[in-house]
Image (cartoon, rainbow, N blue to C red; front, top):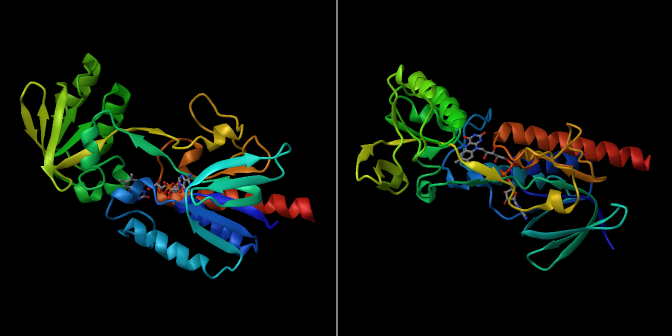
Length: 301
Ligand SMILES: Cc1cc2nc3c(=O)[nH]c(=O)nc-3n(C[C@H](O)[C@H](O)[C@H](O)COP(=O)(O)OP(=O)(O)OC[C@H]3O[C@@H](n4cnc5c(N)ncnc54)[C@H](O)[C@@H]3O)c2cc1C
């Protein structure tokens, strides 16, 4: 049986960067990706130096092309459905949606996170005119008539203050939640309108927001804006493998990708169940890969 050095699950920037590092370290690895990266809904990614404005699929294709230079790296378009560990965590059997099985000494979980929206119609606009990260998409929205949609007061205040840097033409929608008196005053003194009525629907064309309709029948015209989703880990591989998880959802690591389970490493957004960026995720993939390679080297020397 061919036992791989490492299997990497997830071909976002974290998994791709981990694959490159391990390929260059001459490790036999397999990378699996099923194309469910959460930024697939957007047309352009920003802020990754030398790749500013790149289309997400093009970013992945350049990375896959680079990986072709390293013969010990194999790439599979497949969903990993199960990871079975042996009793000592010495071997992991990875099963895929294509009914194949692969065995590896080490695993890097780089499967990302996904959003939950309390208003489902946000999905229709997410990535084209509604966004969650101003560092990613604020520049393109600058000085436009924007909406900030958030329900928890701490999210409302944080996101609105942040977005105010890009546009001062802001309407805040809390979807039925009343802000505290202090919270309202803080925003209103910057001429920010707060609408706390329940949202009925978001209306627009081809992903571009035009107006928001409230349950009262009132509407407000806005061309786009920012939302505060909550996030979850789409598969529970870290949990199923027995990795210790902090009550805030963060998988406990040594800071460079090693989880509390021997031979199980983690990289990218899935570690903290929090959004970050292409650059930070790629860096985390690199760190986890260095940990994998260091451990393999020391164990075998
Ligand atoms: C609308 C939007 C716009 C964004 N714009 C920017 C931007 O401009 N600049 C920026 O820096 N960041 C941006 N981001 C954030 C950026 O996309 C993330 O920070 C980054 O992609 C996280 O990298 P990751 O490797 O952790 O996860 P992901 O990129 O989500 O990759 C995880 C990968 O794992 C794969 N996967 C998951 N489960 C399985 C499985 N069971 N089997 C096989 N494969 C699996 C998925 O297919 C996916 O490709 C944006 C995000 C969104 C939603």
